[in-house]
Image (cartoon, rainbow, N blue to C red; front, side, top):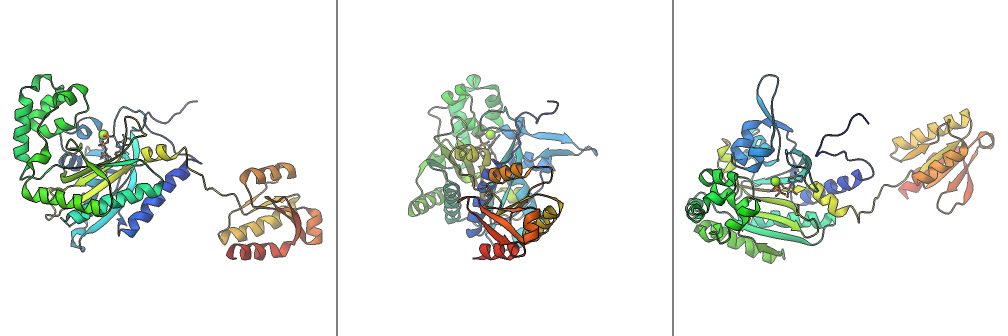
Length: 419
Ligand code: ATP
Ligand code: MG
């Protein structure tokens, strides 16, 4: 075989594609009842928007971006996530002039140059939402509830919600200092990445996946103990709302998330059945990003669901719905074939799934195909049937056969579907 898909990407082919459509359809239906509208942003963006938002000392920016110069020498990046493009679009189209909260969802491929493994791809699909303009923990609770609703509606069970608050520009500097003080004695034993992060962005060290760093940060101060009054109130109210809504969650003070733009609420949904790549969705509040992008001060919150991980959780129990054609026309002879094709064409314009046999196939192999496709009925039409004006109608389930006037087939089936 000469050509193969690149490493870390995959083709989604039938019948599995149906599971992906299910994941997308469910999310769209659930988002709709919470008032979210679709926003479709490009796959390519100017590199700056990711540097500015995700942060220069994060894994995504340091190691994972697909960045290249275009023919005019501009630096282009294949989007590694959806929030920054949505924020860019939000400002570019003055969407902040709409009544808050402005709620949007997106879905589509993201690109990260990661080491491919189970649940980790270089092109993967995210379904995400972003809500702008309201700094009320009720919105945080609503969005977390919507995420639970979406994942449960997709068919997931055994979900665990982890929650944290990482504070704001008031309280984080104090935490930063305290964390640096704690880590300073351990600095030489941290991984080279974390040694760099120590000055640039010490919070990132709390997110490092290297075993040595995980051990070295045992007993480190926790951001949750440094929250200012506003952040603390916000977090307390959010927890109250989640209790009210029966969302069970665990506070995880280590959940700092791998992106710089978060403030206050961060959350992640994990499942026990995925092994190492166990996060199926993650999100948080980012109250400063719109302003940093040049828009008016606008609080915001969002999440993204990783579709591959959902698909791998659902695939063993998913029942494929794809139904066969309503009618399969098995024909013998040119005239019968043409008659059937006309009826089929007309029924298809009315929205019915119809298949026809092709003349290169024997009647027997046409019947076999009807069976394999799972047709509800087969209409058999040959020269004799044309002469008598009646075709043979075979109910593929009961195997019973009866006659049906050829010129009544169309009406008969249209009525049947309406009835
Ligand atoms: P992880 O800790 O697994 O690397 P992350 O923090 O980088 O996740 P986010 O940027 O928050 O992930 O993306 C949200 C979701 O997208 C994740 O919870 C995960 O389900 C999914 N995701 C992230 N990276 C990948 C990838 N390379 N392949 C498949 N899914 C991914
Ligand atoms: Mg990652």
